[in-house]
Image 1 (cartoon, one colour):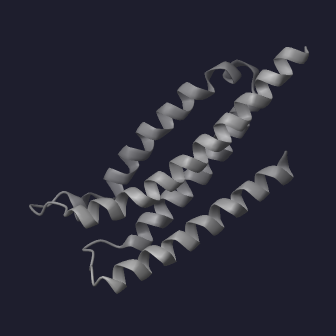
Image 2 (image 1 turned 90 degrees about the vertical axis):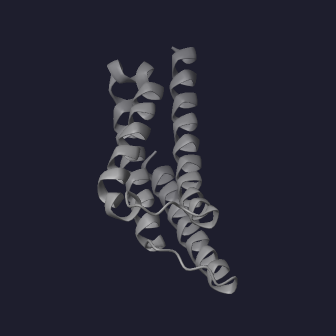
Length: 135
């Protein structure tokens, strides 16, 4: 399990870094300048996603949390939104509203991190279900 998780994190980080550089390249090619640091947004989502994944794996080893992993994950999504708001509130809570390009630029790292979090969660839940069926 440890080896699979390390591979999973490696693939996630490679995807995150690759998509970040492609994202930056596309923005520079079409001359769009964001008022916030795209790099910091990617770092936040990558770090938080790894913390969520590690937490879910530890929770899956505890018997009383095995049936509650989906709810724990939903709680982590709410926590992620709150943490993002707390860390980036100076960038986004001004009188200025987001343009559509800025909104999409925020959604790309969110979507990527959510994809990998849900992928890990489903694999973990399938393993738990398989163990229950064999017992």
